Length: 245
Ligand SMILES: NC(=O)c1ccc[n+]([C@@H]2O[C@H](COP(=O)([O-])OP(=O)(O)OC[C@H]3O[C@@H](n4cnc5c(N)ncnc54)[C@H](OP(=O)(O)O)[C@@H]3O)[C@@H](O)[C@H]2O)c1
Image 1 (cartoon, rainbow, N blue to C red):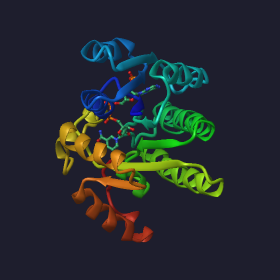
Image 2: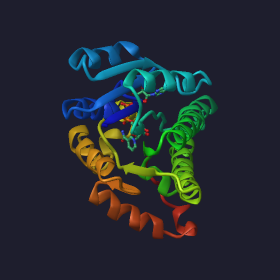
Image 3: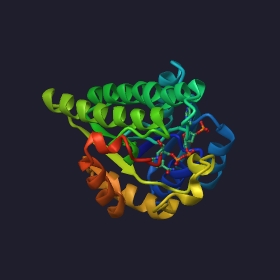
Image 4: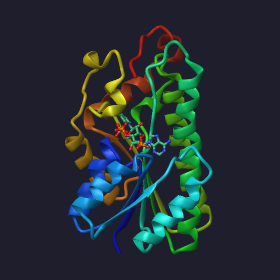
């Protein structure tokens, strides 16, 4: 059975990955707030795409997840692609808290529900689009970088939990570098950002990581190399760098 549920499929990476899986014959459940955009996807693959309006920052999101799983006839893979974040050196508290609402609260809500679903239904795979931004705290995007680090550690923790309980649940942490999606559109520095990837290019690599059930995958090799360097910068030096989101 090939059934994938993608949370955050109304634009960017989630949308592209949903279309690619549908084109490959998978049953695809798509969720996000903008239901009109999800319906446009369903019009392209009416037999295989199912839709559900969902705001992950609300408690009702879990009921919507279960409704979507029912529409798909079950779920083998959950992909959490919802995400938000801002270039926010002004520390606008509203932006920081909205980031936490989607990348921490919403992520936790959906991933815990998926974990329990798989625990009760013979197993499955939980994948999430985190980010290279989790590598270090970034002064220009505090909540975004911190929320991505949270996602990394959370996925690692539930991977250990699944092992401890002998559950057949595979965890895949996908960490992309910059991509030219709506998420970057508001960044005032976007024209200066390095190594920005096309959505098609990044989606192909992300899909491969999901299908190969990788534990972690940094997209792409250039970002993997850069993150290896970032990780080695000691904190007393990091403090002096003007790091980009
Ligand atoms: N673009 C990059 O450079 C980059 C780099 C590394 C990692 N990522 C990560 O990749 C993931 C996908 O982002 P993207 O670049 O494809 O950006 P995007 O085009 O802005 O897509 C974000 C998706 O998240 C959904 N979303 C936002 N708030 C939501 C909410 N409250 N409830 C439900 N869904 C919500 C949006 O749907 P609605 O607005 O319709 O709800 C949309 O489908 C994110 O986790 C992002 O952090 C992006």
